[in-house]
Length: 176
Image (tube, rainbow, N blue to C red; front, side, top):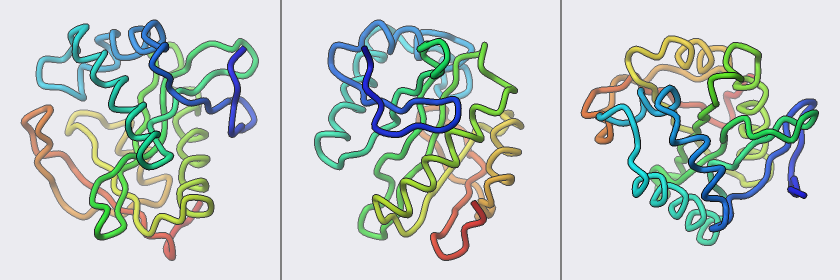
């Protein structure tokens, strides 16, 4: 049975383990999930393996990751949501959420992101959260604005080769 270190009304947050290959494939092997986060639109099996390793490494090094999230009612993988290093020297961490398509447009992204923001500022003591999204991802733009993130310009995102709209949420200015 999966252990959760944090829960919301509908979501359980767990931690990626090296043995979670099947879950990683369910998430990052789905082209609908990856089409806006990498230039090719899909991850290879090797890229999925490296992504999982990176999440495990981030937890070992920093006690954070884009944690796997599960629907409490069904125990099914919803996706992942969390933070990762962005600019540690400046106290900036990147927040991100990747959801499986069957969980889109049901409020899971908002619910998970609110929990991650609360954890980041109150438990992990982050100063600033950074977020960006693919220029075509209007749902992410809407979510970030709803969460109180402020637009700061466009940043080049190497995995897509595009300039992505970028946002910040500073601890002292947060809405949620």
